[in-house]
Amino acid sequence: MTCSSTAVPAIAITRAGTLSTKAAFYLLASITVSFLAGSAAPTPLYPLYQAKWGFSPVTVTIVFGVYAIAVLVALLVAGRLSDHVGRKPVLMASILTQIATMLLFAVAADEAALIAARILQGLATGAAVAAVGAGLLDLDKARGTTANAIAPMLGTATGAITAGLAVQYLPAPTHLIYLVLGGVFALQMIGVGMMAETTALRPGAVASLVPQFNFSAAVRVPFLIAVPVLVATWALAGFYASLGPSLVRTMTGSHSYLIGGLVLFVIAGSAVISVLSLQQRDAGSMMVIGTALLIAGTATVVASLPLRSVTGFFIGSAVAGLGFGGGFQGAVRSVVAHAAPRDRAGVLSVIFVVSYLAMGAPAVAAGYSVALLGNIFASARDFGVFVMILSALALAGAMLRRSTARVANAASVPTPLRG
Image (cartoon, rainbow, N blue to C red; front, top):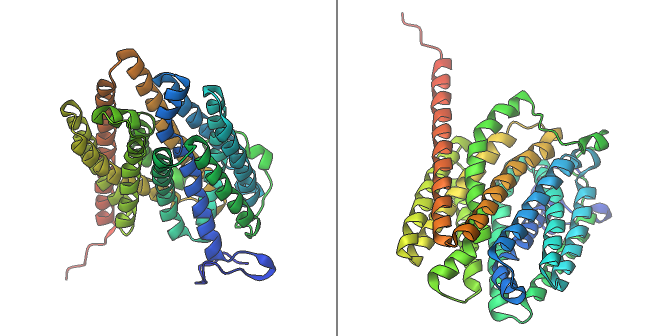
């Protein structure tokens, strides 16, 4: 089967039981959604775990932090592996690990088991995201770039709100959500087994396990320009994932577990809307619009804190989510457009390394700040100011890049001869 963009029904299966290109594309996108849903699912459950096992807010940030570190390790070691052994073997191993992780979550009896499950989950996610992302680009470069921006946000929104609903309304929420996700992963594993490989195999698999950040010259400059945007957007995501539920529960005085999932749902859901709305714009425009919205949204959130304004907090979160979606999509598109097919997984892995590092480190620092100061609002304010500074730097860089590009394009236009 060739990896063309021929229009076929999404459920079509070609000869020998192989999924069609379109079906394979949607399957790969669904894997990113489910993996990120699985990573977001524990967030609304943290208050329940705290009440059940009596651990501190610092433990919550440790649980979050070890996941981010595990993702980083997997990206650094296995991020380029699928460029050599193929996308399917990496995905099969990752999904199998995710199924085992869901079982571990379901039977967890203390914070040690929770931390172990998060480490396994991070390793599986880190190994999978680069392979999935590269596979989507193999099948359809234009739609694959958009899917790589939408799927993580859609997964985060889905996992957060589903877990929140499960905690609020269903029995055994710390078991049921994980068992359902485990069933989804099992079905996806069957689907991957029916896929055709999307990339040619090549030697060097063992050497690819050695972490490296070497880029071609064509990728290096766009990547360096995109880094500030990646850091600003994912630092905000880390804050919401680690402290968002506790912050909004403190603001509202509510004991509802659903509201913790609603926080992530708002920011991730608005990010999806932003990606879909801005996908026809060029990468530079998306980064400028995204970082500007990120500043405006974060400023609204910070302003709502001393007023204890829940309405202002959610409005600011929605605007910041729009900025997250636009900024991240623009950053990804500006880089992968210059990556050769054989280097796609490697380039995406480095993008995600920067993203998860930006998400994990500030979030852990914020958790320790809460523990030291004993004031979640002061920590949230300081974190918000930090994100606004990062966003302002990213906006300045994006605008300078666009200005430079316009000058270069104008200079390249030949002057008409006058006679």
